[in-house]
Image (cartoon, rainbow, N blue to C red; front, side, top):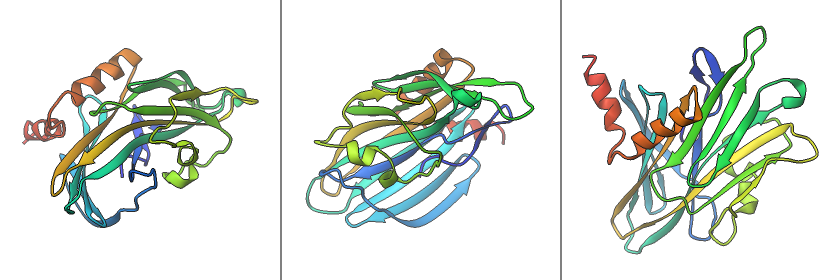
Length: 239
């Protein structure tokens, strides 16, 4: 789910954008089973199922360089379902070796940073990134850790251990013995889905030359009631 594969910004590789994880009311990860996927130029739609929960994700990339994922949760049971939804990402930062590094990191109701892309034999390109959700953020975490493997696996992240009492802890720890490593960022919200009801949440990740522009574009998209319609309208203008 989400956008974990390579994105390209001005022909520079930017990886990853984000993924998302759903936890039950006790903080245990749900394991949705893939059902189906369909695609058209405006969006990719994939569906999952997990016991009494159906999940539909609609994702698209908008003209203002915002990657959007809208997740609809349908409770098939006769009881309310209390869930935790976490949007998260992990990026390598290697300032000591003059490799790709991250600066200007902030987190709270949203998360933002500048990633300095420096591929071999090409000039450095600083790219601002702003990550946010359509629902109020209940807790967050930003942490620097050792390692070099970028995998969208919740159980392999520090978040799986740090999520306690329905919270990520609201911490920002981006310094250590070494400034090199993986910087992981997570935003969490709570969702209660009533019996035989639906609830939705959207995640937006905006890339731009500046943090102000990235934040503005993200906010513009998430203010929409059904933000993926922006992609449909954009494609309809072409045909």
